[in-house]
Image 1 (cartoon, rainbow, N blue to C red):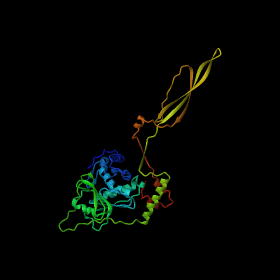
Image 2: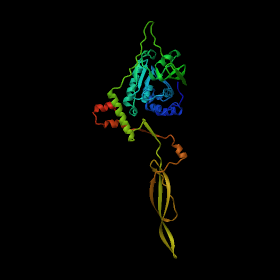
Image 3: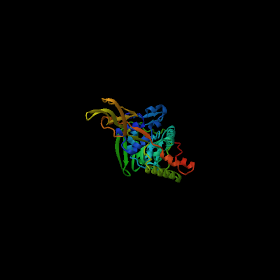
Image 4: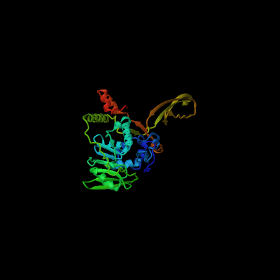
Length: 389
């Protein structure tokens, strides 16, 4: 499934295409997609395909097409502080993006059938926290993954505000999924080849909306011999954060707000800026010319000065020289130059510059602020989540 948008050269290019095709429609979803490079969740030998709008599978590892994930993120209507359950959490790509939106006071759980995929997801999560350039721009709810069959979740498990199932759900399992949802919550899952958004409006009332035609592999039902009791899946507990963890969250938040007030902080991993305006030189040419004037009946030689101005463009440090020849003898020139920056011409010249942008990496202001605190190095490392950059 996929292929709805053009392939991108990199992650930002892919997101631009998803926005243009109206798969990404809100700022929060866009920021989450830009913060996490889809290519980081591919095996190195397959990374060249990461920015195509196509699903990818290698062994048990699977990623849905970018257009599917963007529709899911929009349909979930995520907000800070919500609880989220990902059924068939796979590589953890979607769960990590969700964690950037729901923030540190949300709940972020995932259930995945294959143990090797859970290990892969945990490795990718650790790499994001330790090495991503965008991690410090967000308050993050770290996903917790468990191994198990999502059709065998314990009946006494808690409910969630938002649920996504990443495999095809048969009609007879629909109610099973609904029970896991809180009143007012949103469930997104593929049912009968339709990606469907289900909102729980009451204890026994629901509203359904078809989002997109899709094709998903069906949920795997656990095979067992006759008489064997199924292995129930225990979801991670919803625990209260420790005082130490809360302190880290609020210290980082305070420093980030200080950076905002000083104009040093940028909310996104990158900033796109328009191309620099071209400079023009305004030349003032002063010329000395030997001329002859009549004084009475005598022809007397006399030096005269004349001035003229001209503008010429300077591009990439190269100045175009314009020379004019004047009739006369013994001509001598003295030039005075004055440089001024003027607005770039409108019209065709401006059109040629559309799309030419420079990507500026934002300096990690938060890290600098933490390193400047009068604290022991061990506490600074904790505040930095032990990141080395």
